[in-house]
Image (cartoon, rainbow, N blue to C red; front, side, top):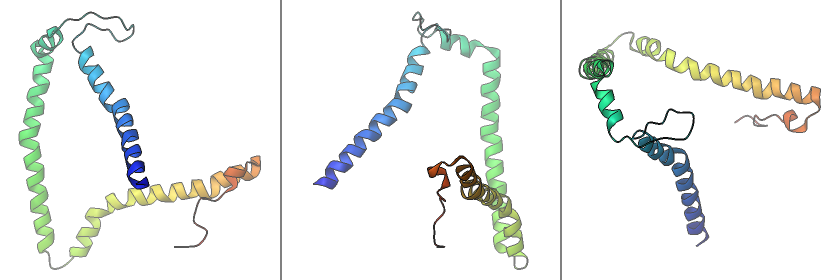
Length: 149
């Protein structure tokens, strides 16, 4: 019974947060798109579909939509196809397969590793040094585990 109550409370909190930070801005943006609001003073007049008619009659908007469609139908299948061909070639390699995989995945692996090392230095050395100098107790605490895991 307590678990059910707790899960319902957490779900209600989730719905409130989702509504506040996602649904409200989306609905408000849709409503504002039908007005002549300039963005500073919250005074506006309802103009209906005039904003949308003006946007779709604009030459730059038409050019942007055409460019986006070109990228969608040309670049996306091309990049997916080349990726699939590259993966098939690497999968069929007999020699240097591990080296090729390492070289291709290294850029994706090194960034989070370096980020973790930097945060480790900040939490373990920098903040604790500031805590010692300024005599602030919560900054003196080492946030890393006491025993190696």
